[in-house]
Length: 186
Image 1: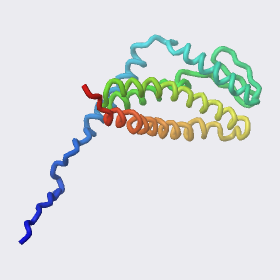
Image 2 (image 1 turned 30 degrees about the vertical axis):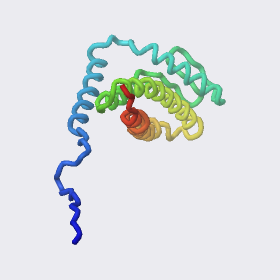
Image 3 (image 1 turned 120 degrees about the horizontal axis):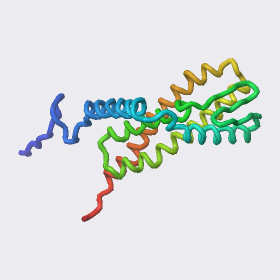
Image 4 (image 1 turned 180 degrees about the vertical axis):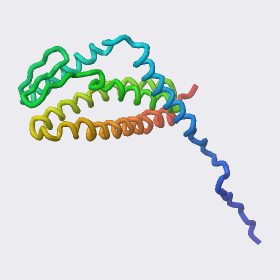
């Protein structure tokens, strides 16, 4: 006679051995952070506080666009090309995308070190991606100027949204989960 072995059965709705992801908490914290950062920007910051970032964005963009073969003139935060005249306003600097990315990182349950890595790598990457966006837009203006508004207002907005989500997911996979697996004997 053989002894029957009991096999545990997982019933729907039963607790699993893995902790549940706190979706509600993460979404709430994310929304509060995005709102809070934007509220601080709109209400507490003095006009022009982003001007150094606007100037840096304009200088770097102008240098790369010019190096790529498009003639231009840079005057402060204005880039003047044969086909377009741009004023690099605060929204052209990716600061708002940085607010969203930081909110993703801070809302997600992770170690402080993981969050610091996410900020140290993610924020410069976002600003670099924004420069690539502006250089690409300059070439759209040069080659197919009738599509400038479409690319600026829709294509790049959607692309940046996807970029933010991909960066957040990459940070979770490459940093947070890796740090969670590393156990330092102590």
